Image 1 (cartoon, rainbow, N blue to C red):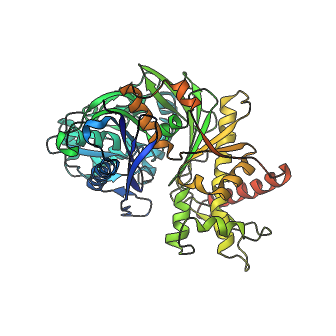
Image 2: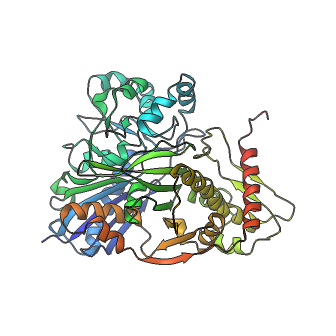
Length: 499
C-alpha cells in the first residue's frame, strides 16, 4: 500500500519538495531558489515557467532521493505563496505575463481610489480583508488592462486566473483541473468568506469576469491526478492550503486562541478564532484558516512584509554579512547603549499600519554605529513588528488567553537571538517546534488525512514536539522603553515626503 506523502512547498524565493512517511517524518527533500524580478521600484514578479520548472524538478528529486516510485505515494499536498496572481491561456497553458507577486505595490493608486469611492466597508464585510495591493484582485485587473488583448480574451472565456496553487494544479493535471482551496480563495478580495463562494458584487467592483476564476474546494480532498509522465505514474493530489494556513495546521493550531508566526521572506501571524468570522477593529485581516467537510474555521491575521527579506538586504544589498547566521552573532556583540532602529518598509508597511507609501528607514545612527548595531536593528525589527500585530490581535479577540504560547516556524526561527528578543518584546513564551518546516507539514497533513494515513486533528495536535521554549527576560520598563523608540521610528518612516 502507498505509505508516503509528497509535498510541494512553493514559496516566494524558492521551491521545496519533501517526502513524508506514514509517521509524518520527512525522509527526503530537494530545494531550488529562483530569481526575483523587479521591473520598477515597488514591482515584484516571478516567471511562471520557472515556478513550474522548480516544482517539477524538486518533486522528482525528492522522490528519487527517497528511493520511491509514484506507486509509493499515497497523496500529494501543495502549499504555496499566497495572493500572487497568474493568468494563462486555457488552450495552450501559457501565461500571458509574469506572475505579479504578493509583495508588488503597483496597484496602490487603484486601491486608494476604490477606498475614496467608499468600497472599503463592502470589501471588509465580505472578504475580511482590506483594499491593498497585497491581494490578488487588483493584480488581476491590472493584467487584464495592461496585457494587450487580455480583457477581451478573458470576457470570451479563453483565459484562466489562479494563485500559484491553481497554476501548479492545472499544470500537474495537464489542464484537467481548474480549482483552488478555500484558504487561497479567501486571499483574493473576491471570495465571501462567510459563504466560501465567489462574490458577484466584488467581481463587478474590480471588473473581473467570473469565467476567469477557479472552482473553490475544501483544503483536504481529491483535487485530481498528476499526469503519469511527470513522476513515472499518476499521483493523487489530496491537499492544498496557502502557506500561512498550512503552517497554522502544521503547528496544530486547531483550537481557538492558539497562535503561530512564520518568519520567512515576510512574517505572518495567525490567531485561530473558531468557526465564526470576526471583522477586525484594529486593521487586521480575517481569513479562512481551513475548510473540511464543507465547514470552515477562521483566523485573524497580520502580515509583516519584510522579515527574512531584511536580512537579505543586509547581506546582498549592503554586503555587511556573508550569511544570515552571522547576524545573530553581530547582534549579540552590539553596543547596548545605542538605540538603532530599522523600519523595514522596503515595499510599504503591512498590518496594522497598512501604509503603501512608507519607505524603509534607519534611525538612531551615530558615528559609533557599526554593522553590529545594524544587524541587531534588523533582527529586533521582527520583534517590534510582531508586537504591533499581537497587541492588535488580542484586542480583536476580546477574550483572555491563558498561558499564551507563541508558536514560531520558518527560516528565521532558527536564530536563537531573534527568538529570545521576540519573547522579550512580546512578554509571552515563544515555542519553536522540532520540525520547523511546518508549512510543508501542514500540506502533508492535509494530503495524508484525505488518504487515510494520518490521524484526526486533535490527535495530530497532541503529537506536536517542541524543540525549545524561549521565556521573556526583559523587565517591563525596558521593554516599554524600547517599544516607544520603535513607535517613534515608524512615525518617521510614514511621514509624507514633504513632511
